[in-house]
Length: 218
Length: 231
View (cartoon, rainbow over the protein chains, first blue to last red):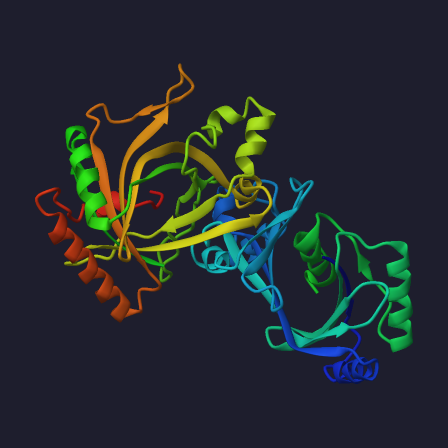
């Protein structure tokens, strides 16, 4: 499985219905609802071990802001991604100076509660982005089956933008498939700027890094 | 997940008769088990500022990382500590199927069995050790539990002894020179709030306790022995 992501912030919450009508017109099969959740965790300042350098006079708010860019063991942030079509799986992606090679793993989604509740002394949940939309499949194509997922993205209930995800079978995307995808995007009038192709890692971990690249801190 | 359990100790000379009795009770031959456990703890010191009017410190937990080898013949025993000397060993070890657990203190108050909440998860794809390090956890120690297992109704009956690495022979050796065996009988129940299932599980364990009476004395250990939090 290999994915391509596109995110646009300069749209409204109703733009998605235009694109959904276009997908129906292209005779794509509607696979039903689709959603995702991307959470961002930052180090707990109390575990960075630098608080004693501040004489204890700095208000907590400022201290937390100062710690926002700090790392713990070379990791500046953790991200977790769950997607409705991949039940039971959670993608775990790390960002920071010590992160090299494969930047994450796929864990069972039961880890979500553990990270949120049992590791608060090290990691604090800072942001939750939710996506709500639908999933389609383009049929009868010489380039392999393509799944198209699109979702409105919300941060704490506020609309932030629209996300497209294209998924191909197989481990890599050849030039022919990429060209075909571009043609499809253009003929459908879908946003074609800032397409995120490839990235670190492989499979679901690569998809996770694409979400982080597209959505982190936006 | 909520785990209901009872424990007993038997001497090495009682083992044979216990295995025979359990085999006839459960109607199955004992399964040999070999479980490798590593304990990882937060790598950084946690120094919260306790401000007046705010809650106390957050609890910090150790992670128990386990792998069921089942059969020593099939998979060679590799120590995490010693695997660092060999690229092949560390690769082999990192690619085993590890399970991760964080255990809470057992429920307080008068209980008929030990009742403990356990959060568990697994890495489906990727390097388990890199994952733990990225969470800012560090390796603390490791041990192996070797023994036998039976399944009886919903209950799992395990007879094990703890082994540690022998630095000179590079193999594992018994931790306790008295050669005693630990018997653990447990049932995993979905959740603490499922009272009906919990009560049923407690009844089932009490029945096992009665049936094994005379062979061993299943009891509830001091709950402080189960505390895995960092102090």
